[in-house]
Length: 287
Image (cartoon, rainbow, N blue to C red; front, top):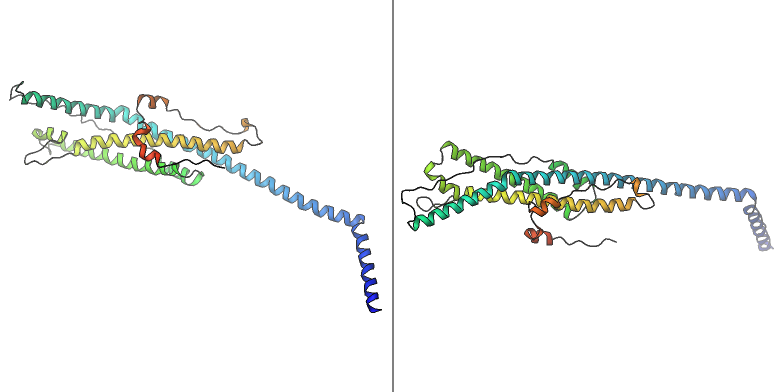
């Protein structure tokens, strides 16, 4: 009988509970609670989408800024090469060819033995480029999500700038030695072209600096051009993510840098000149 009483009580409680759950009060309560949870989750998703969109917009703006800085670096390298470095190297090569032609004629006794070679040294100086490399490093390393090659490019651009500045400074010091008389005038040709001195000693400093400056300015132009290209591709991916379900007119465009002219004239070296470096990075498709 005791068990029957418990069973009857449980049955009565279950019936009462079922009647309560089907009452208007219970339905309103459960519906309101469910709606509150759904509304909170919906609002959270909206906030999250808005946050991601703002982050992408910020990254696109920073990417555009990095493109402009890299473009500035490349233009500085191209201007230096065109105005100073390339003419300096061409004049040096021409003078060295003239010396070799003079020596050949002198050895063949086609000119008098007392005739001396007339040396015309290019002693013009020029400053190293001043570019916002710290700004470029900050943006690429900290403000955008680019990985791999762009990071390596920023590093090698900085190395090229340091090397170029150092080589230009050393050439200036050597020019001062020529001008001050520290290097005797009758030894100018030997130091300028790296010819053997008395005793067989050779000083190759000046010809090595000419080639080093030319090489560093090529590096600076090539790698900053490559960085511009990589950053434009990165910006296009960021913009593509922004225009999902949005009009493209509402999203800023990716900045563009046109180097077709310098590439055509050869001011920017071809990829083949840096084949090992370029081939070291393999671009993988992203899911």
